Image (cartoon, rainbow, N blue to C red; front, side, top):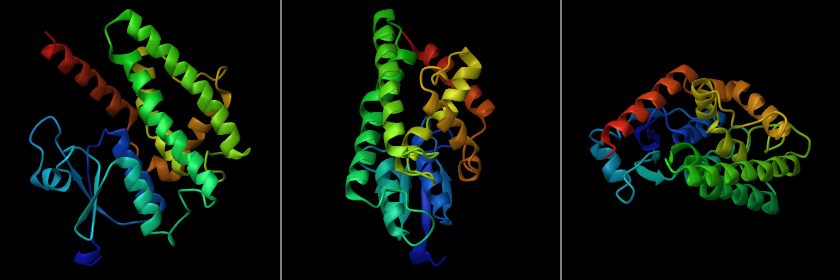
Amino acid sequence: MGEEEEVKLLGTWYSPVVLRAKIALRLKSVDYDYVEEDLFGSKSELLLKSNPVYKKVPVLIHKSKPVCESLNIVEYIDETWSSSGPSILPSHPHDRALARFWSAFVDDKWFPALMTAVVTKSEDAKAKGMEEMEEGLLQLEDAFISLSKGKSFFGGETIGFMDICLGSFLVFFKAREKLKKEKVLDELKTPSLYRWANQFLSDETVMNVVPEIDRVAKFIVELEDRAQSVAP
């Protein structure tokens, strides 16, 4: 790859949103240099220069030009390497609109409710977050049945935009389940999503880029210990 075609990904190994970019690059068979950032220490000058607004990962750098925000990066990868690998976004405009709608639902509504249920110390807020998270999963169950059209993934026969969006969180779910014995996806309540999650994590493309569950579980423990040490 010539310097003018150089592709770099700035990220952290544990980040679900960085995983989105890794999966998309893998699907498109794009070679890239990976740069691990220390978000708890000193952020690199390259990161600060490439994403001066939010100063966070992931950042994709292609031809010396940065692209920020995970789902924006996934779309950029799909459009830039359109002739390589399967299409990530659906071809029909209405299907693309639905994929974007439900991905926004995951990031803007469902995941914040999950984080409230997991992180907050208020029992009332925790209960409300858990209720909203479970309600959101039922909505995503219906969305999967509609979008997948009886196939294995939200994107049909192959991993697509919504699969990458929601699937990026699955390793954290598995790690938390291992630590807390708390299931996020229930086989009885959301059987389609449960089967989809197992199919997604066993896909060769995903298996080659996801972090190890044990390593993520250890990181969660360290993160919780760090949060308690700085709490007033």
